Length: 328
Ligand SMILES: NC(=O)c1ccc[n+]([C@@H]2O[C@H](COP(=O)([O-])OP(=O)(O)OC[C@H]3O[C@@H](n4cnc5c(N)ncnc54)[C@H](O)[C@@H]3O)[C@@H](O)[C@H]2O)c1
Image (tube, rainbow, N blue to C red; front, top):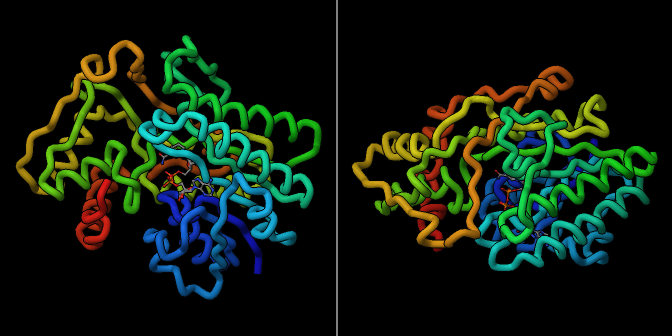
């Protein structure tokens, strides 16, 4: 039986990835800094005979060494600080966790000759206005005093290191740049998850500055299909892939869709970011991927339309009261 490792396994994408890998017959070694019982996203899999869970912190080399399996082929590395509110509050966590924690993972992958799949982000393109973005498109960031780019820069720094290590034959890797992934089990602080959580709890959902911003919302099943192809197919080695839906949707439209699919009659709460944050806030108007590379090399493209994805997310939330009852 093939062994794979997953960090950030108790999170949104990690838990779906673990579930899919188990269903594909892998022996899955899962790592998270929370206790297994606290990772409610994994509760359906907790007793699976092929799931081996390790609690630890990627900042701690000893934890990582205890977790690492010498005969594993791949590690999917997802553990990271995720969410603007967390890294605005604690920007140094991006150095400690996303950069130094990943450095620990990289060192062991080099030592044990294990392929590393790194979860990067569409944020690496910054505010490049020339959409759709190809993987080779420029990063456009502007002024370093704008806080939001610290997450983008931490992920991009790791990507630089990975490409350099690959070119010098020290490490095999591939990276996925996710575009607005949504679906069941997501921390309810992102556009879709927050809207579903709030609407089903009869709280008005927020939009920022009228919600005219355009995003490409990617249903979790498509994202998991993408990252697994990147892990399993050698054609992906040494490359970055945009993993995103290619259909652009305005944020206000997706929030309205959450309201409509929930069959609720509820107003939207519009937030003026200039009043709230002043000049330091910067948003991206268009975030659209070009995914031709993933299609040509891996046969991957997003298939699930947003109305179907939102419906599935709402149905799941209604069936899982713990999700709607959590305090955020
Ligand atoms: N969800 C998206 O739309 C999206 C978009 C772009 C990139 N990503 C990337 O995908 C990955 C997964 O994102 P997600 O949405 O599942 O986030 P998530 O917050 O749900 O999951 C992250 C997991 O990492 C764990 N973790 C955090 N710090 C850790 C540490 N020091 N040691 C061990 N575990 C730690 C957390 O406990 C959590 O379970 C992240 O690397 C994120 O940057 C996600």
